[in-house]
Image 1: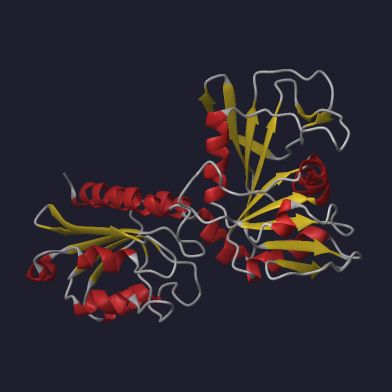
Image 2: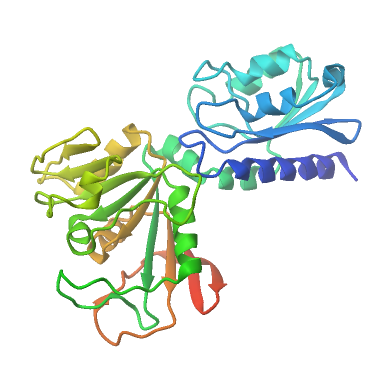
Length: 351
């Protein structure tokens, strides 16, 4: 096995470890680290929770014989940090641990880190190799990368539709919405929520469906921030997102009645709404925004070109009439996944 093949092998393990932080570390990235000595893994770790120890710290701490560090290679999927944030800089720990070689998957786009962690290691005489499985490492944290390069959240659209392309029946507000998901795809949808920092819906969805937008079918993750786009005050006043004690942001040109967990953000009705929303959410630390509906809100994001991925569930039933599903434009199909007779299609927006 060549050195490049060996480095890729251990970097793939870093990626496996990093993925275990899904839904727990944002707005930090998911990162995995592996310590190798003499062709054997002697330590490994990942970033487990926002505010907690980084992957490199956990990997180094897991090494039983500290003397082996001086002749080991540290593999890490993202450039080690070089600044003091919620934790001390990992670059300093690596230097103090006398690790002679570090292999990095990709650079950190965060301005306070980008290139500096690598420069610190090199200045200390450590051999640093970069760009190993770079594309895969960047893809794992595409939301983090997007937020720090485009100064807006990574936007994922999600909806369920009938086989003949309708998102709901035409119904009165008192009628329940058409259910397309089964137990398995509901769990899939809530896992998607778990990986998001915020979920956005339009005020009409609140009015007609009164959703809770929580993680009832995917335990062990924090509930994302709920975001409502409203032209007027939200009705009913006892809507779940306003009264359940969890955090909600309401974007509206009209002021509402804030509580301890509900905040109203004034919007300028003379300016495009979505750039205002995305700018504020970015400043609130939202890296991944999940857009769940309704059809008007989803289509608004599509028509504005402010989306990155779409996840569409198609149920094995026909409605024959109703509210048409959103029409994706400039989209490229990424995958199709079957859950029994339910089909999940993934799309990405062409850049």
